[in-house]
Each structure stands twice: as structure tokens, then as C-alpha cells.
Image (cartoon, rainbow, N blue to C red; front, side):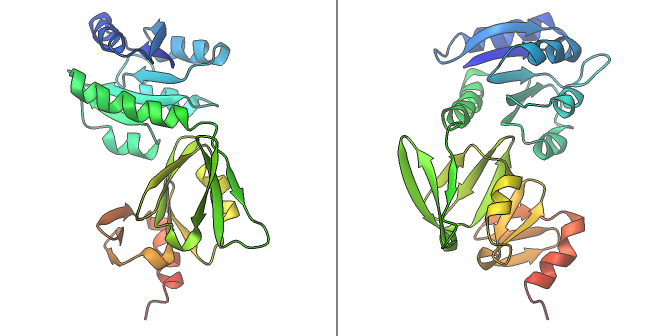
Length: 232
């Protein structure tokens, strides 16, 4: 995976470089001292993974993400936890707090590698019978019954499809998969989540639970969600 490091601190860049060198599937192709420099580089060169600091002079890492037309996989690396909620909204792969140790770094890059390896997966819907979908994984088409899908999580240009047995990572946007699923069975309750209405077990304030998994409910969607659940 070709990756770049974006951080205004030379020491921080060197730290991430040393960690990158521990993993054979990572290849550092560029260092950038500012988001503007990274923005210009990413317009010209294809990159699979970006290690991105948040707080930098002139333009933040969050601003960079919002201004990118095409999003590589992004791991935020910052000294503060304050941006975790916003990072979640922007579907970054992981959020690392400085100083980053090897074991935590390994978790983050393993997650990024999984996303990268599934980038060629496609979703196929049977147009005549929308009771199931097929996803491509490792050269195989795997059938997933719609009734088994609990919820779908967006991660940039990918989605994670969760069933009771397994998580499937597919290279498709949440918007695109939402358009292909029956609206009477699935509901967008957050910019990053689709949920199966039949798998919602309870609602507590601004969270919908499917089993033990709390899913955030955006304020503008809550009233419509309650209507669809036939609340009395």
C-alpha cells in the first residue's frame, strides 16, 4: 500500500516512518509538512493510505479531508481526543493518539489493509428478487439474505455489512447501496449508518440498538424513524 505522512512536526513524521518500516505491505512514498502540500500531491498521485495529523498551521487535517474529491484510506494521528467525534463523521479508518505505540499502530494498519484488499469487491443485486444481495470476496460471489443484514456502516468509499455471523467489507458508497436496498426494510438513521428496521431491538435517546450494538441516530432522521417503526 502506497502511503504518505502529513504532519508539520518532523519528529512526528519520523516516528510514523519508523512504524511504517515495520510492515512489509506499507510503502512510504511522500512526506508532507502541511495539508496544502498534501492536497497538491494527492491531486497528482494515487495514494492508498494517508497518516494525517489534525492540528496544523493554516489548514487542519479535517479541512483537508473535506476538500478531497477522492478519498484514500485515512488514519488520523493526533495528540488530542477532541476531534474523535468529527473524525467518526468523516469515516476515517482509525484515530490514533500520540505517542503511537507499535501494537496500536498495528491494529490501525491491519484495519486499513483489510479495507484496501476489499477495494475491488462489488455489490450485485438480483433485480427480480430483492430478498438477497451478492458480494464479491476473494474471487467468490457470496450470497447475503437481506433478512440477515443487521446494519451497514460507511467507511469512506467502502461499507461494512454486518450480519450475526460475519462482517463483509465492500467497495461501494453507503448512498449507492442504500439506493439498491428496499426502503421499507432499511433506513438511513445517520450519515454513516443504514439499519435494518427488523433488527432494531430498542431505542435509547439518540441511539438505536441492534443486539448490543448502539447506532447513532441523527436528529433530522429520528421522527421519520419512529414513524417507520409504527410507534404507538
